[in-house]
Image (cartoon, rainbow, N blue to C red; front, side, top):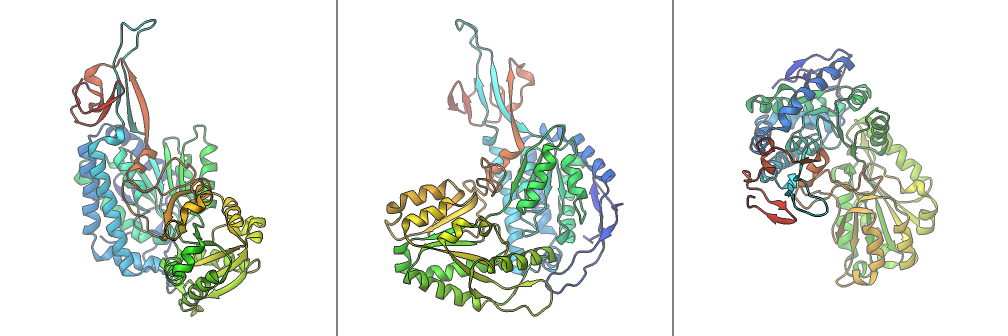
Length: 527
C-alpha cells in the first residue's frame, strides 16, 4: 500500500506524463512526499476509452454483482488500516477522530447502496401490457425501466478527503447504477486519493469486473478535469465544491457537441432563523450550539451556518454575547489548503469593510494555513440592499442580520438565493404564527430544519443534499442518500420487445421479485 504518485488507468498504475507536484501539510506548510505525477490529455483519453469499453458489461451486470462490488469496496477501504488515516491527517490538517469517522461514513454509504440497489426499487419498472382489441387504436406492449447512463466523471472534494472524494457518494451511487467511474482526485489530498483508489482497484479485480470500471487521474491544475468533461464518452459529471468551479464545469459541458448533466453541489450560507419566543426561552443554549456548529471542522462544511436572521432586541443581544464569547475563545484553526485559506482571509476582510465585527477568534501562530473565526453583523436593510454580502465565505464566519420586525424578517429571507439548508429555531407552537416565513424559506432550501443546526448530513434514504440554484445545478436531485443514484440512470421504454431479450426487471415472471407498476397497479406478482 505504498503511495507511488501514479495514475490508475485501465487497471494499471502508470506514471503521469504531464509533470509532477507535491501535496502540502496545511498545519505546518511542509511539503509531503512522494511527488505526485500529473496525467496528460492522452492518458485521460486512454482512461475514458477503457471506461467506455467497460460500460456495456456494467450496464448488464446483475443487482447482486453490483451489491457484492460495493461491499467489497468497503472491505478494501477498511483493509487500508492506519496508513490511510495518517496520510489523510497529514494532507488535510483534520484530526484523527474526524478521519476515522469519515472513513466509517464512506464505507457506510457504499454498503447502503449495496443494500438499496439489490432491492431493485430504483429501477422503477413499469409495464403496460398490450391491448390489441382497444378501439379506435390498439395499444402496444410498453415496458419502462431505468438503466445506467454511461461513464461518469467524479471530482474529489477538498473538505471531505474520503466521503466526497475517490470512493465517496458520487462514486458509490454511480457504481450502484452500473456506471464506470473516472475520478479526478483532489490535489490537496493526492496521497489519500491514491490509497483509496488502490482499495477500489483491488475490489474491481476481486469481483472480476472490467479493468475500465474505475480509474484515478491526478493533476494540480484544470487540464485533467477539463479533458474529462469534454471527452465524448463521458455522460455525466459529479462535483462538490465552489460555485465558480461548478459553473466552470457546466460551461464546459454546454460547449460540447453533446451537452451532458453536471450534478454540482456548490455550497450555501445555510440561513438560521431565530424566532422571538425561542430566543426568550433559550438564547444561551442556541448560541452555544450555533458557535459549536460554526467552528466544526474550522467551518469548512458546505452546510456551515454562515447566516443568522432574527428580530432585534435584548434576546438577540444575549444570543450575540454568548456566541461572541465562544467565538473569541476559539483558537485559530487549520484550513484545508493555501487556496482556501487565502480566499477565507480575503472574504472576511471584504465583509468587515461592509459590516460590523462583533467577535473574532484567536490569532494564527504564523505556521501553516490557520484562520480566525469571526462573527459579523448588519441591519436587514443593509443586507437586502447589498447582495454581495449574501455570498458564501468558506470557513468559520457568520453574519447576523438584525431585523426590525417579523415583516422585515420575511423580507430578508425572501432576498436569499437557493440554499442547501435552512433552519428555524422556535418555541412550541411558534412556527404556526410564522407560516409565511416558513413557506418562503422552504422554497429556497433542499433541507429545512427545526431547532437544530445544519452541519452533519445523515447518510440515509430520506436525505436531500442539494437545493435550488446556486446551491446545486439541478434542484431535482440529491448528492447524499439512496436517491442520489437517480443522477446516473436514464429511463428507456421497450415497445413490443421479445420476452427472452427483456431485462429481468421487465420479464413477465418477474424473476427479481421486485415491486413493479403493472397496468397502473403496484405488484410483485408475475404477469
